[in-house]
Image (spheres, rainbow, N blue to C red):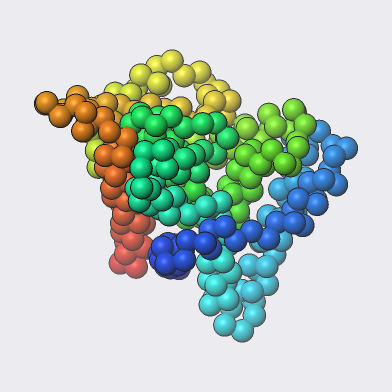
Length: 289
């Protein structure tokens, strides 16, 4: 776990210095493999699409571990996989592009880069805040969770699943699309829950947890894989509305999308530091034990 934490810190540092690394993609072989599976349908196609890449990742990690200086080579491999899996664009760089845009029209255009499904993002505090937390989940927190839990193969599973769901150019059939949605929702479920509680800790506890509880009351037993993590968007919206209502004469300022973006960006940074701190405490505890 200590080496995984170090890999995460180095990867985040590299992406901060060179955000273009998040766009590094060598996935031609993966796309050709998907095309070869055109005769298959449904869950079987999804499994066959993911299995070779995941098996290769496990094999390379095992082989590197048996080589001289194996631990270092395994760590470098994990770092490379992690940098690949953060994306498809660097999260902070996209937020920075919105903040530094010269006017409202350019900010609204820059905000569209946060969309993962191609839908337009409205230039208002609520819509922008929801888009930001989902981008944070799928570009950063989801990858981190599965990397800490399963190592490079976990991060790769999460990233490839998101690619299958979001990239229309792969042209999956309807049954396969459903299977990918189920898998992607299942992989999002736990990290999204953790994000809600982290945002509640660093933000407005009552508003965030209240929105989460209301969502849970109407959720079905199969929501964890049939539905996306809508509770995360509801929690972010509740946090934003609490900020707006707390303005006391500053409603226009508090409801400004740019103002809320900067505030939410700070909250997500504190959430990231909270996750890393918890992992660091686990590492220290394992050393002391």
